[in-house]
Image (cartoon, rainbow, N blue to C red; front, side, top):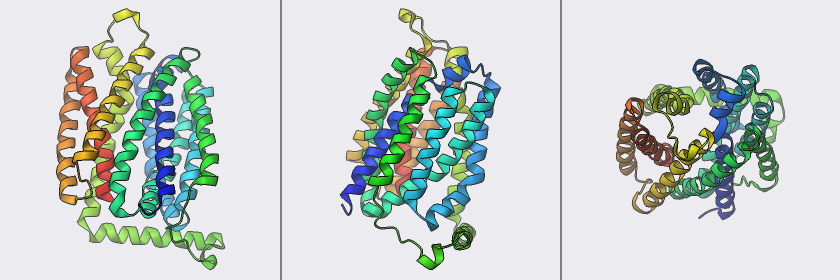
Length: 343
């Protein structure tokens, strides 16, 4: 491997953020339903604000990452995650949660793409497929720990896991400032980067080159279409699956468990399924082969479609849970395979 240090930092980042996100998102829907009093329409609007922010800022912020520094983009994004989650965890109101989504949407724009481009440059394209799969394994294990932590903290105060997650993101950002290497990225010359005008010209050139690629290469349009369709599917599913379990399917009354505990169990099962499937895929799937990656993506997306339809129509908890876990496994495997194919 070309840069073992970058590999270690990537695994630590993946594990840490998976832990933080599990800490936050295991109870976020319950927090928004119970503490903030949001209804299903408001839950969807929260997600819509996040997605619109991501749509508006993704291209310009991605261009800045390409023209200035991938490390800088990732670090700033991590700090923004910290700000957004601290705001949401301390202020359970619809307006504050919407404002937090804007901050977090910008954070996603700063991190996504820049992180994958950074590690691809550092370890080499020939190694990045195995790196992504290893990161997925680490993330699933760390997420499992985060789920337990989320349930424990939420038993004290419902918003505490979100607040603690935000503070941990702050610590991660400080760590990355000093430890994250960036050795393979070719920075602009001093003359180009010495002024705001130079940065804006770099961004303009990057945008123009990207638009040229999209116009000339059908594959780029295909990638954009994939992103649009997947975004349309994931928005409703990700915002309403908890409400679907509570209001449409119904949670079992076994042991009188609190809904927070049930969602911890559901999320923990997703992590276990994701870890096992990632472990098998890392030993049997050569994602660096484009033909293999395409076949795998076709199969995984077919499974995802079937799982979501069954989940939506399920009339009992067992069937809904099985469909949910199957969909979670598909999405967990799809991510690293898609990023390997894309890079």
